[in-house]
Image (tube, rainbow, N blue to C red; front, side, top):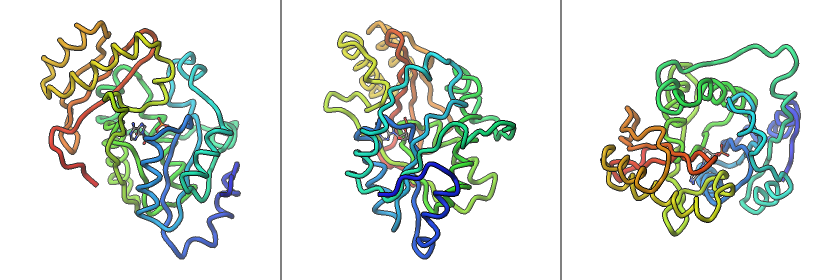
Length: 259
Ligand code: AMP
């Protein structure tokens, strides 16, 4: 597995692989089974699998959230190697946002609802870093988790609006046996918070926003939103806070997951 730290390094490493197809799996590290499922889907779709490891500061409004995000690059490189990644792109913040950086991309409507309302500027950061990664890696296929359903909706819109020659593959959410969706943020939950957090998948399973909200509040979770947004496939989505940890989850209202 090659590890590239610079844009030039990625381009050089991919130069002799352009005869085949390239898949990109963007991540912020703290890799878990959800990320491994994305890599498997990428492996199944393309000849070369690139995984990016970049904790993107521009998508965090709250410095405490960014500073408290779990970081363990050595473990992430081991996990990427074991998952069969060909190339890891792990740039510094300066490589992605050098001094003088001032270009941003925004998906105006889809990026402002739900998560965008509670985390202003979040999707501007996501859309910008993803467009940069797409431009650097020039993948045929990009792979994202349905766990972040609004992110998928925003990026599908960006790809269509900017006529990018990319296929977006959305992978179903990977869950622990108790139903909690895998997330890098779960590591921050105390055992009591984790027990309360189990109300999140159970509430979504009602497929009814009012009923779900009542169950979440009953479990002692602070509810930011429960909604059925205009995403494809139709989805019920929620964001809650358990102590200082914010969790999001969603389930498709239909069983089919789109490609
Ligand atoms: P992150 O590192 O949290 O930005 O996530 C990187 C990618 O992994 C995103 O496309 C996420 O949607 C996806 N992802 C995160 N958690 C899961 C999960 N439990 N199941 C499937 N994909 C996931």
